[in-house]
Image (cartoon, rainbow, N blue to C red; front, side, top):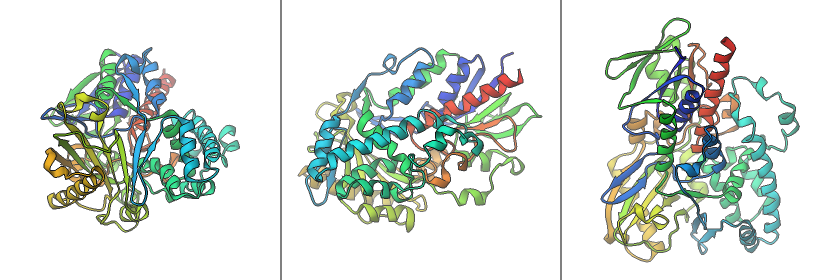
Length: 494
């Protein structure tokens, strides 16, 4: 009998681990609470509109390619990638919008137009960022981070200071550039890491390399095509997926087996179990108290990435002046981050982001129509309500109407919202966070919740609340980390 492995959750981390372990010959079964694969990277299809329900930026294409290469495949075998140019558009309050070009030479020229000498500075800045990317993403991000001993490597020690672990992104960027628009452009990718730039290690300027050099891509058909591809790879290898099957409890069944009880009342026993569901939910709801690795106080003292207010909007015309990705920095960046992290409150004048995939892919909306997803990051310490969601929809429509030069309310034919309570209901998300734990220095590597249970020998964890952190590519990496570690453990025993 092959070694049996049960996986909780068909998000990207769970699907990655499932496929890689099935490739090694193990018997893998995945239990998913919802009715489709992909976790938060789902899809909404209504009235001829198609919306990416979760992640919409396809960054770090090398991470996805690495996954498919494990199976002798390429991303191109499953979906077609289009590089967006411009990568995104940024709206400001006190100047004309800026289109971020995909071409690096053009980006240097743009920076030079904003600040004398900034073009060559950008080149040097990105050379440093490339080094961080190659060291961090190339090697150390795949460590299981169970102990600091894993980092006692001469290459890491030698590069410790050049990796900028002890300097913030804010200070690092300010050392190179004085122009406020450039600073905000370079701080923008850090928002995906779930912490304000002043609390995020400058190591993560590697995200600027991912943005400006590796580029922003779009999988034709939408991000759900990627979810379907990861699912298909697993199925081709014999992974068994069971949807609408929520795990309700986990029990140690002797020293070498773990049992899962499903919402149907059925119990399954495995040699190993990987929890790809929300780590806090698994610990606090699926395990008895004696089997938990972390106390409730531990979880309450974690720094969380934001939650979000999401709006899925359909218009009966093409909204002018937008790009596929548009960032609305036409409000105070500092004040909004304070509203999220320092003094949690509903932002009076929020920053927000929009994704209009129908501008690239006409299949995402009926002919002559426009699909738009708007996202406002908000604190996890707040509770959304129908009144709050209606209030912020008005704010978004007002701002979009101003920038488009027309009253968009007259053209709104579809709307749906999604917020903190929905994240909790659909994904058991801790406090309704959208991205996971913030990537602060004290929540990096071994300081994050462990990939291996401290109490149940053959129980492991993967996903955004463990290493390496929030985001779609890190979720793929997390699945590879845990699958590689388990395979090594099994190999040692045999």
